[in-house]
Image 1 (spheres, one colour):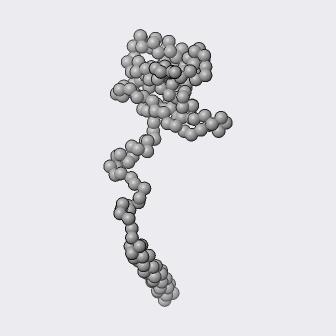
Image 2 (image 1 turned 90 degrees about the horizontal axis):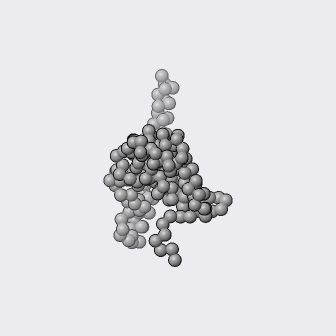
Image 3 (image 1 turned 60 degrees about the horizontal axis):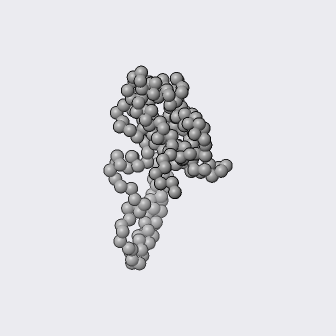
Length: 186
C-alpha cells in the first residue's frame, strides 16, 4: 500500500526526475505556457511555485537558492526580473493546469500548464460571473411540463404568423415598384 507517499516517480530515476523538472521549469519560465502530460504538469506545479515565491523578493540569498534548483542563470534572471515582480501581489497559486485531451500516439492525458499572471484569455467561468447572469441550457423555458393544448396553440400561432410574413414581402415589392415608377416618370 502506498499510504502517505508524496510525489510521482514518472517512471524515471531520481536524477532523471530532477533533470526533467529543471527542464520543464525553465521552459515554463521562458514561454509562460507549455503543453505536457497531466502527471508532469501537476508535479511541476509543486516544483516551480516555491521558486516563484522566492523570486518575489530579490535578494542574493534567494537567487542562490533558486539557482541551486534550476542551474541556469538565464532562467533565474527571467524569474527574478519578470515573473517574480508580476506575481508580487498573489499569495500563491501562480500556475494553472488545464486538461487538454489525449495524445494521439499513446493516448496519454495531456495538459497545458501556464503562469496565471501571463494569461491573456479569461477562463470561461469568469465571463459569466462578471455579468451576474446564470446561463441555462433551457433557453428561457420554464420548468413546468407542457400540455397538449399548449402545443396546439403554439402551432396555430406559428401558422397565423406565416401569412403575415408573406404579406410583408408583397408590400415591400409593391413599394419597390412604386419607387421605380416614380423614377421612370422623372
